Image (cartoon, rainbow, N blue to C red; front, side, top):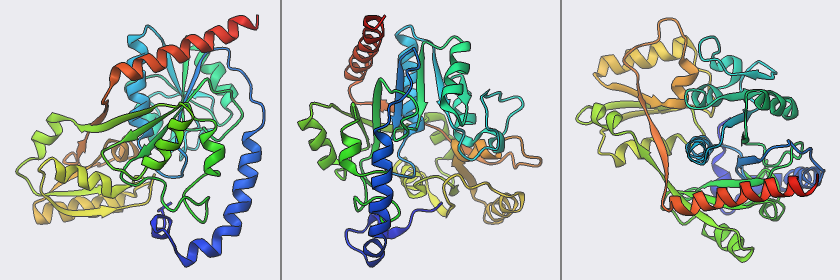
Length: 338
């Protein structure tokens, strides 16, 4: 879906009209979050967000994958496979799966880390453990109580923040903010914005740390695009952030086209984009996540350039200490219950 603009306006008639629905939805979600979950038997680190739409969870999961391996762990990502048709449990296989099978994000992440896709998260945990996982990295699922989380890291785009602070559909929040704050172990703020500073301050009162990070473009991708007018397209949570990132690298963005998050491009749409780019002599560029949805297509234009980014933390030592401490405590809790 494409997020409505009124979610990011402080006061709007639409939000006021939808507020009762949001209050009802929030009350149901908050009550559901109180249910007791099932212990996976190994540490579970959840990377989630308070609101619908994109915030940078996938780059955060990949950054944590690298860190966990440095700590001697064997992480496996657990995903519901949003946008895919397979119920699972299934391990993502890039040789035979497409985004329509298991979702774009699992397909993209599977290049770097084993990914288990399962609508039933407990079945996904069993599959991940059968692959030798010592740690489960949950991609999303913060509001779902089905599985006990040992650590919950919440990702927020510091430029966008949480919009009007109202619960869906009146705003972007998935549940009342206080209920979500109470279950948060650390906040990951991406970028240099100030839109989420109030949330960080509230968590600081609860002795929960704030970790700043930023998305760094791949130097090779930037070099490939410099000096060329580009036609950028994206179907992600915040396409404008992608377009801004290109411009911030000194890339000439001549034309843009935004689609809804997780948009499944038709062959005709891609052909039209490629034809327009060729006609105007623009280089066609998109995100890695969008390209994952196009993988395996017949006749996919080879001229589409993926713009790769990775997440870098301002204080990697603090992140390492946080994860190490939480892993130790998670295992200590399980040992003490034996």
